[in-house]
Length: 388
Ligand SMILES: Nc1ncnc2c1ncn2[C@@H]1O[C@H](COP(=O)(O)OP(=O)(O)OP(=O)(O)O)[C@@H](O)[C@H]1O
Ligand SMILES: [Mg+2]
Image (cartoon, rainbow, N blue to C red):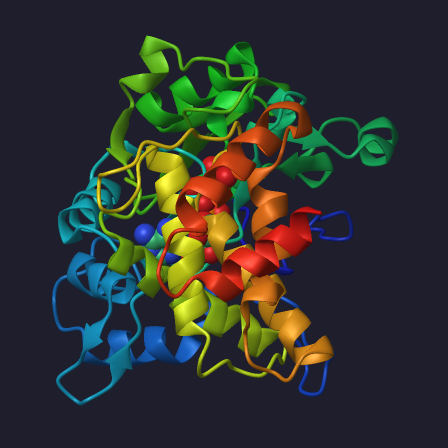
């Protein structure tokens, strides 16, 4: 059975749902807010493909080496610069990429904000040239989202037929030898999760209504993400877990690494929102990262003072959004330079999730740590004002 995108002469296509395939669209079309990775980084992917003379697994757009280079960044022999997407241990990326070249699926696990979704999108973009074959896991994800559904008008009019079948992104990935993605796997009810077992172990999906099956084409694999801290988690059954290689994405090892991640992402996001870049913003970024890390770790950077941790997670992702919001404030209501007052309100919002318990934690940190720190007077004052 074929699920190739776009019309083919052999198949009626009027009821095809092709909602998410990448199409840059005709020139002059309204630009999208957030292009998919394979569009946003198309020139890097093209440069890599042109220089990549290593063997590619069946249906892969790049060799595993080139996929890892795409994620970690580097300079190609012809001088093309590949920007780093993931900042972290090289080995993690190598294990993730090589897993995709085997018959085991890849599970990216970690606390919130450790770039699981980000890495999964870029891996799919580099391996298959398409990161959009995506199932978003929720407590309400039905089996149809992983297997297939039906177009009921067609089904009633003509009975079960290929034209009435609505393939899930996973089924399309199987039929086309591509990378499928399942986000937040552990939010999906356990019995629905288990519909992945046959797909991952037998590499086939029976469609009893048509008396057919869809066998996965070489190149098919699946990347799932899950975070181990959120509420509403359904454990992975051990049968399903055995089908995955698990790669745990860690929090950034050092403050400097985290500052680099935040600065890089803020720069990219700011560009896509047309915010002016903040040449002097790095000091403020460093401050946000320091505050987040100290509150997260429960101790100051010098290891001398214990502090209490607030209830929410203060991830790198939150630091990115605090700084981005600060930049927007600076651009629209300030002089364009990121200042303490621009990040103070955002930090307060990120730290105080539960007003009852977190406000005290924040006040204590502010008075015991921020107030005493050399060079932080402006920041202390801005935070006091924001908290008032
Ligand atoms: N080590 C890292 N390298 C590069 N970017 C990172 C890193 N850690 C976090 N980020 C950035 O943090 C942002 C959030 O990441 P992402 O949404 O992928 O997190 P997540 O692990 O999927 O979180 P959640 O569990 O909440 O879904 C992304 O913009 C990503 O670029
Ligand atoms: Mg995610």
